[in-house]
Image (cartoon, rainbow, N blue to C red; front, side, top):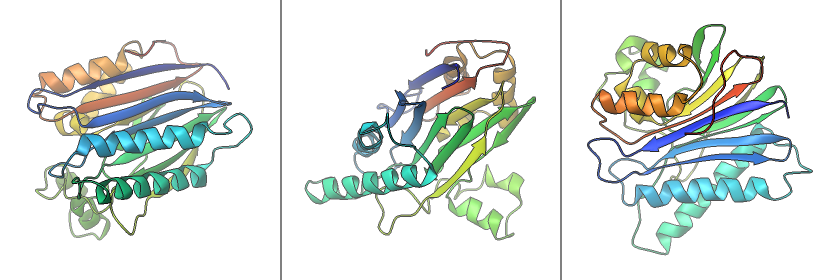
Length: 248
């Protein structure tokens, strides 16, 4: 694939004792697999669920990665299998009710495909603008989609974290899609610890400050804003932008 730069960081934050987030940043075949997962708050063993989700995703896509094209449907099927693995685990143990969000993407050449369930987000930074690609699967966002709630109120609505989709539910469903990439694009995946602590305008300013150490800077900024939750950031910059960086 074309040359890319990576940046990733994860931290428990200043309030939670444990980090229930997981992430993946794995070169596979002709591309790179990216994912973030956030153990569902209030459920049992969220960290176990997020780990199962990411490990299942990586294992499934690693098999035959050199010869197989990864499209959005492939990611969706991987999330469906990860969901089944989580349900199987809690049925065999005392961890009933555990779950996790997951946003997964695969970047190859100039195309990004993704699949998504929950309120972890996928952003694309292009031409000086931060674009949110995914929609949160929450009660608040559902009210926005129905026209019952103004979009600007969704970020502070009391049901913004009440999820309507995540891994650990049956029946399971997720969103999927694709984006054509351009030189200089930055792909950013994050858990809601980042977006709860920082407005999108602040996230954009950090991206504009340069890619080097981006993920770690965003995590540190979330902690400086109170660190109310676990925060995980995975970012990839497509060849052609001015700044470069490595995983943190």
